[in-house]
Image 1: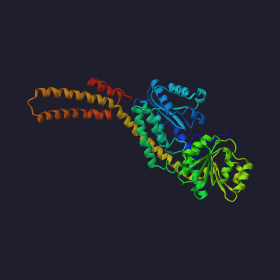
Image 2 (image 1 turned 120 degrees about the horizontal axis):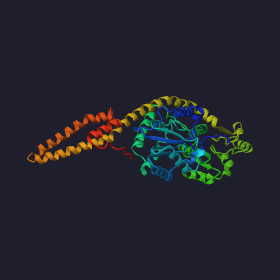
Image 3 (image 1 turned 135 degrees about the horizontal axis):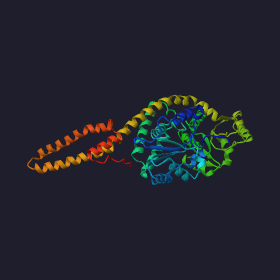
Image 4 (image 1 turned 90 degrees about the vertical axis):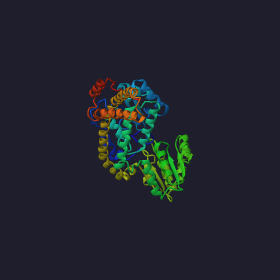
Length: 459
């Protein structure tokens, strides 16, 4: 069977045919930083995506619901300190703190039921800042199959919610996710990357509506029941009430779509009849040969000669016999035409990619500065607790010897102690945050004041 886009497994987009996807893939494959774990950024990434794995592989390594919770718990039980799993139709990425890559690969292989040979060339891994760089690009729509799409934000939100549910997300991944959100907002507000994002399904509905003079109160047929068919159904709802018919070789799948989108399901054997009375039809199945033979297409042409039928064929290979393109009574829009109609939109977003990259890199630099400051927080916390204890002990000592003072005078003594402690801590805290937030400096502070240096509390 010829290669085909993920018509039934993921939103397809014309960008791949226009070079946008390849430009972003090149950007995503760059390793701009030393690929290593650091104390400031101890995050690792192991994943597969539409860049590296087929739809069959991605489907096997996809997790949701209770299966996702089970995988997260297994990572924690295997010695990982933190874990977030982002699993969509186009990617499964494991963001971890602690543990090792070999163990992460072993878990994914065992949970997917695939062999090492199946996954050997599909995995990619990134460490430290490179892992965060990749996360920010995913947040911003730079690594999506549909460049600039926004659905990934809801998918990340779900991944975080599941991680919190099983207590697998600690302060490192939590901070990275929060900065990823802010980076995404900047990219989406300051560039054209995410504007006018058009999937083939959405474009097909728009063009069919134009060709038919609108779809309100029209007879519309959707052939197929995969992701593209569902996207088409969602977009059709926005064009007003219509008589919507779903057909699929598996009738129950057509019936499921019909229930969700207020349509009618018909058996696949009614295809010719349904097309005969339709005003517009959308075909999006994975069939390896046309759903209508040349003879059936010719017969349909005769039936529709006076009232032409608009057909949008999203099949690869085509679902409708090629002869339909020159037969009267049928207006055929195929994948090539969809690609041609979206060129201007995609090129506009292509020009926004370098600007988005600049924003991403600026945000990554700010993230690293914040990480370095945050490294001093545990030491600062124990230092403040230590000085608070010293202050309280000395206040009690003074109050026992100054019982003759009025309540107002005692408050002045207490305020004086507070001001002295704050004044004493102001300079070392500032320096710990901005200048000397290194492991050596923190150890020196801990030894000077005989306090613990402040462990790295993960969760």
